Length: 155
Image (tube, rainbow, N blue to C red; front, top):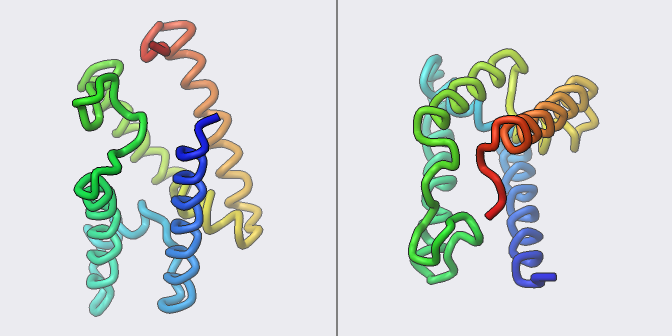
């Protein structure tokens, strides 16, 4: 077992939980990324944009700071010199997948951070159902892509 990876995962989970709790405690907002980005782009309520920009800046700058400190991003690339690596199914498939995720967050009225992290913590029935659907669809997607189509196999 890779204890360092386990500790990094634990630390990341604690930080996600603390940030979600902080946002709810200080602003009364749910840390759902699709809602944060969606409302920033479409609605832009007065006085509501600053924290949204700060939250997104933190999401982007956190991994960059970790990389600058020399810790890397974990096992996300095929070669040690790469940062993330090429998409397993190509850029076109990645764009289609991103579009489908966007449609899914619209249909599900949220994403894994809003439903899975914040909604489950509040024992929200709608979030429990949404997270169950997310997990089932993830399992189906991995099965189809790896076993039926042959994309993204383990190396």
